[in-house]
Image (cartoon, rainbow, N blue to C red; front, side, top):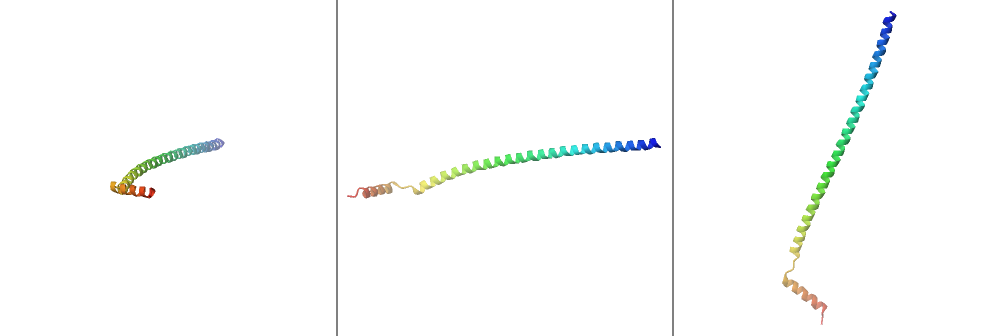
Length: 103
């Protein structure tokens, strides 16, 4: 009977060790999974930030090009609208000369 009790106690002790080992292994697997999840999340965040930077840079570049195009068009339009014909220019110059050189 004593043998049976000792075997039961030994079996229980062995079962407890197996459970502790299984828990330790499960904790290790869980910690590894959490670490991998953090790494994946960090990598995804970095990739998203890099893509956002590329998009912003591209948008800024396009805006700069559009600004230059608009300025060129506006300058051409102003030149066209503000242009003075030769006859008007002569009259203006003669008027300025008369004002400066009053007899």
